[in-house]
Figure 1 (cartoon, rainbow, N blue to C red):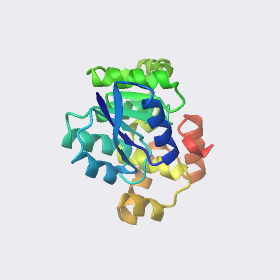
Figure 2: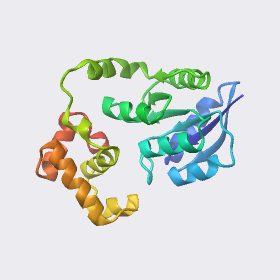
Figure 3: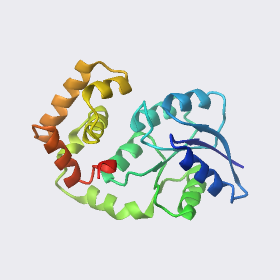
Figure 4: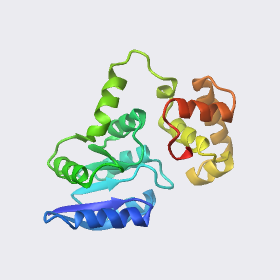
Length: 212
């Protein structure tokens, strides 16, 4: 039996996932988490075959959370289930240690196939993402945002969504000065001078996410 841990901060999403999993005879949900801290705490007592992880939960960033899980629970494969389909985010997830990536607009059959393949020790990428990833890998010109560190990219995403520096500092448990430093550096790397330009850059490169 494939024992699945669900990590998503939306109750409706978790409920829908459980309904999909309940249609199978070889899978079961053994636990749920609503944020990174909750997940890490529950993984210490549960023994899942697979972690089905949302990249956009409050608190610990998705990339950092994948790294923490791989460090503390190396035997638990991570399958990302995310609303984000941008190649940059997918690449960061795999580099952090994810074994698979599926978008939330995929058919249930794709998710179930991904779960079985990842548990079997194979990598899986949503077929809808393959073309975009191939183009990203083969292009000679790398977009400026690929030079951002994981923390800078996380803050970039939060700024694009309209979050203020103080709010970002509180959510990430960092000082306002640290957030300000990261913001200055990421804007220098992106060669932009204002929040408005930040949003325009995100839209142009398909990184706006929930902003649109």
